[in-house]
Image (spheres, helix red, strand yellow):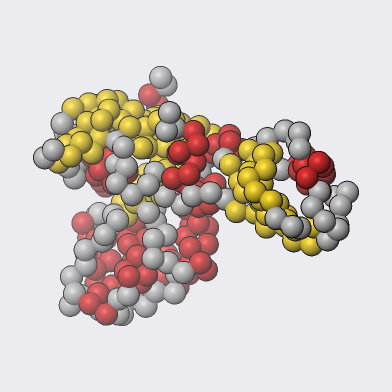
Length: 298
């Protein structure tokens, strides 16, 4: 392992809450400058892992290094160099967003450029003069994104960064993450939305029931993901043309339509369909849980 290029390293992390085993031996390694998506359903252990990385909670066992430091011994140094967006950001009700951000800035040694902070707020359509008690869930999430990014940290730890945001603001957050990477930051973000991970992440770690079951380049994971497609033909169903296409299986058929399951690339299917009058072609990506069932249940 080239330690100079490794920003996050965890080995054998375990954590229990009473009788609930949240982590059962998590192993992770994140390289400097990459965007790493931490993917899994709710309750899989994503938030627990992130909180251990920042020494907000302590593991029962295992080893962690963040930016080459032991967060249990150097937690202040780790947090000073990081930007953290928790799943639930606590804000004082009576304080405005601007006052809260200035308090965060003071804790970080006043590193933030306030022109940059206002620019972030404008891009996310966030009114800095609003009191926290009057913020919607989406606007509270925007405030959390700003506080994580405002001091231009070298490491971003983002727990479900687009939760509660409308699609346009989600895309703006995606742009901000891309800009942070372009400026040299390492980004570690959790999500249960596979489309978001596909768009943002260079590599993906999949956690399920407290264990990282796979780490893969994002495109390699997506190519293995099953899709469903429904095809309606104008001249009657064309079953023979669809049989024998690599990676394509027939799930059901109707009078003039067929529902297919596709594994991997869709190029061969599209070329086969091009020979026939297709009235409708709809595709659906399965949920993350279905991908888990397809690849990891056994």
